[in-house]
Length: 528
Image 1 (cartoon, helix red, strand yellow):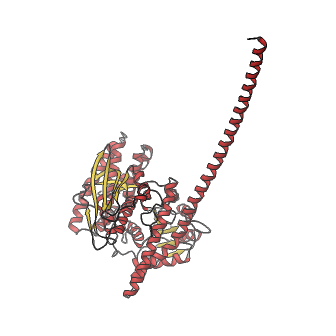
Image 2 (cartoon, helix red, strand yellow; image 1 turned 45 degrees about the vertical axis):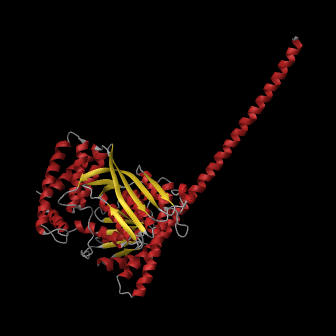
Image 3 (tube, one colour; image 1 turned 180 degrees about the horizontal axis):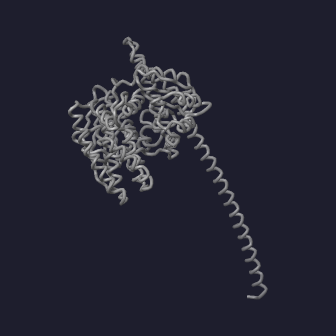
């Protein structure tokens, strides 16, 4: 090949390479432009989604507040003399309000699940009793022509699990079974308990002979707004249940044949706790409507006039308590300065001074008064904020009179109307009062003596292991003492033991050493 021809070819190649480089450069620019465009679109979509979830949460909050007096006044009306027709109308009104409450709660739960803001509240509970309670709640909804079979064995131990969310899971699935089964049978069974490493695998089956799930939605039954009831279902219950089961490390598996029925298998994981006592099984403070709460001094802090009026009436009708009220946090703070209250029920969202800031101010001069937060904000961070502000408890709106009763019972159990000669007599009397709600005097004394012996052993174990910093032994012992004090009805000491147990779980030996001395002194007062 001639030298000139070679040069020509080289020039053509160079031009071609230059052209390719230009195309490549343009391609990179187009790629970058596309990337920025996609990033912008994704950002806008995320903002829209956040706005949607925020809107749902805000509207759910605003709708829950007026539901409180609506449901509450239904309960108050049921305490009056009504004709059969009035009872029928009131029943329909209450049923509609309860449906609306459930719908709003579902919307709020979807919002929290989408934002990954649902946290499990692990506590010690009686699992078989909880499952039976779920069965009792749904029993009245089951058709008269349908057999309801419940197979829940008594377990010899407690478990550590999330009570509220378990009730939600089984409540949703059992309600669906009751709704769609018009003849045949609904079966609710605790099928298996398997030990998997250090956890329990719990398997519960809900089986019915109802209409089954249509083929066209079988694959999407656990997606939000995919309802099996085209007439009045929202399609949120199964989605929420499945997400909660997943949060517990488990799953929900469904088998269904249209026209023949469905079987839902719920799998979740929890930890085994202490063995149940043969002599005494007290899972929670029993609310006795016959208890006298009239001596309690109560302050209600609520900015909405209708809510204040309803709550005032609720305390009067159900608990014979005449309450004091405040329309905002500033008025509440001033009232607490000049009055001695046993318990304060505090709303969060109020003008002038909100509930969080009011609680913080109150805690600067009063560390003892029991403050209960009342709010339709039920996010975990809202509860944490209330606790950090110095509030002792949290009630979700709309609440029932039983929610109030539980808090009054807690406060009443640690407040004595009489003066005793010593702290020892006070603790023993509180325990006796608690036991005599359930047992005769002889049995109560025997149980208190058993508790005293167990406490002595526990205190010795703590004193032996605090210096060697044996965290595992300390954690187990604080847990045992929490159970003993809870059974005795000594909720303040039980709470102290629970706090120490939490520190032990976090390997926080510093906070244990800071607090354990005072705790042991208080505990020893029980039998010294």
